[in-house]
Amino acid sequence: MPPLPKKKYPKARQRQRRSHIILNLPHLVPCPQCHTLRLPHRACPVCGTYRGRTVLKVEEPHRLPGQR
Image 1 (cartoon, one colour):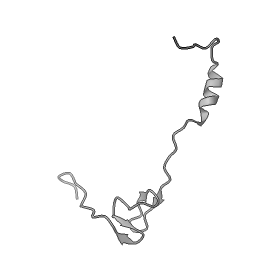
Image 2 (spheres, one colour):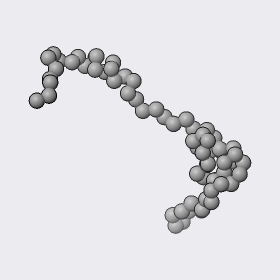
Image 3 (cartoon, rainbow, N blue to C red):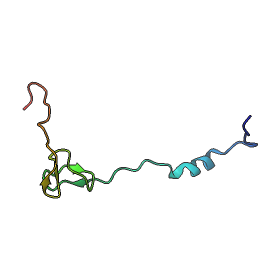
């Protein structure tokens, strides 16, 4: 059998301990070509450029019927 705590752990102490366990939002920078937000040091998924050069072939986005 595993060991069990001798006393009840207070909720305040538990929450203080877990205060550093958080999700961090990714840092996003605007693409210089199309001005959409992208991750730094990576090719833009919208226009496919990186450092002024086209490095990815980007196809036209799929559109629903009736949209322009």
